[in-house]
Amino acid sequence: MPFRCSGLIVLLASLFLVVHVTRISSAEERAELAARAQELFRHDNLVAWCIVPFDAKKRGPEERAAMLAKLGLKRFAYDWRQEHVPTFDQEWDALARHGVTLDAFWSTPPDLPGLLASLKRRGLKPSFWVMAKVPSDLDQATKVQHAADRLRPLAETLAKAGCRLSIYNTSTTATIMCRGLRRR
Image (cartoon, rainbow, N blue to C red; front, side, top):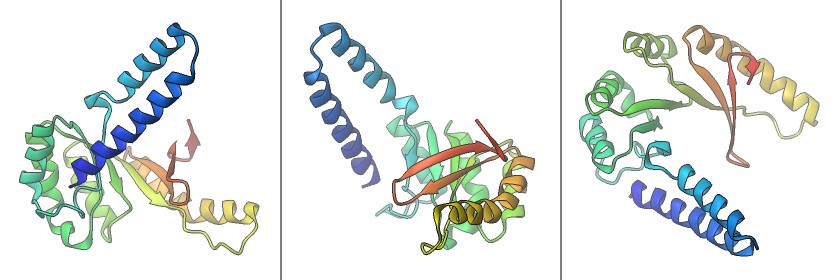
């Protein structure tokens, strides 16, 4: 059902834009906003996410990649669970056969060096989405320092592999992108 969920998100976002557009007085402004919305929700601008652990049919790598291609989704964020680790190589190969790009990888698996070697063999350089996980009882400056100290070694490792570290903030579902240790 993830596609339906994604469809619902697109529908809700579209409804929000429709409500927002009706509040704009100028026809020119409405047309510009509608064009921007159409660009934003282009099929090739969407990234499929959370379909691996929440797939009711429990598709394997080949079936999943075929499904994405059939739906016209060419970009994929891989959200895995421990049982998926043995099929990582099959996943990357199936995505390639079906013309789907691996844009992101959720968190880091137990064997990060092995995963990075697998990705490198295929020329893949996804962004890694990682939560900062800082203690809530710290002041803001200490939280930032704690997160930076915890994530710096991972960011350096990923940067050497040509990958990005994306800090995923679960409280606001915001993703802050950075390349290695440099801000964009």
